[in-house]
Length: 97
Image (cartoon, rainbow, N blue to C red):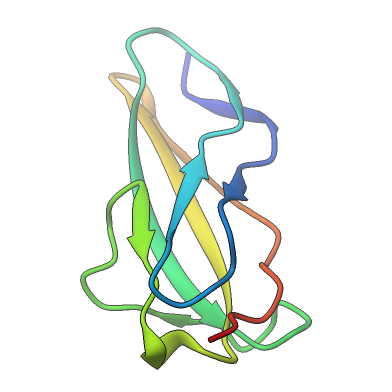
């Protein structure tokens, strides 16, 4: 059975420059084993007009001064031998200095 998301991914950590955010996979069903891939994006405050952050493909994301004022989300993609599916977190609060 292909992966299916049953609980939205989330982002943990302080939304402050020079800290790290961590993606929580949420909950998934599907034939084991499932593997996960990540893509971090920068969005507006409403979670719209999101842009891929190039190279940000790990479960953690190190915030820097370049991220101040941005709102971030993470796309989690689950894969197994039957296929793949993606789910998106809610956006963070604006990143602070």
